[in-house]
Image (cartoon, rainbow, N blue to C red):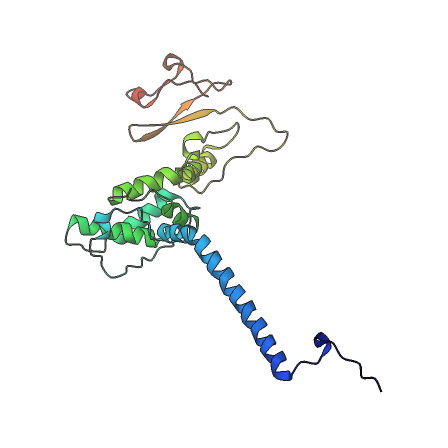
Length: 245
């Protein structure tokens, strides 16, 4: 009887040898994972350092940040999100902050700036975070930057006060009501209907010396010279000669 010799590779391995091989393979996989994580961490270290530095950067100067603040102040006004009229919101903020008492001017400035920032939200908070570092040294610096950036909202709301005109056939009472609404910022922008013909204004409103005056316009929208107007005696100074544009 001839016995066939089995090659070494085909000989069955002991169970403990197979288990050892499996463990070694598992360890090698874990080492590869650790090596990959270390590589990613070291390669992204500069980006992480920069991101961390950006979160700690403040537009407020070091002098303001070193001043001791009062306990957290929460005003009874809504946070500014970047959509509201900045002038109206700032007025409400100043009125609410007048209740707080401070020992010095610097203490007042630091607290006003901090509370102001804590009442920023959404796009407004992002705007403040993107201001240049160390660029705000007092509350005036902060409010000037604030109004300059969001003045477009203030202009959009209040511009109707200076462009409201009385149209053809409109009663004076109705016209004055529209003017008051524009003055308070509640009147929407005028949008002509499709296909309609814009009407020439009959009266041009002007603000001078604290008075709101109205100057008659002719049929072409032109303000006539003073010599053509029938003015009450003693009141010509309230009117200005200006061509309607």
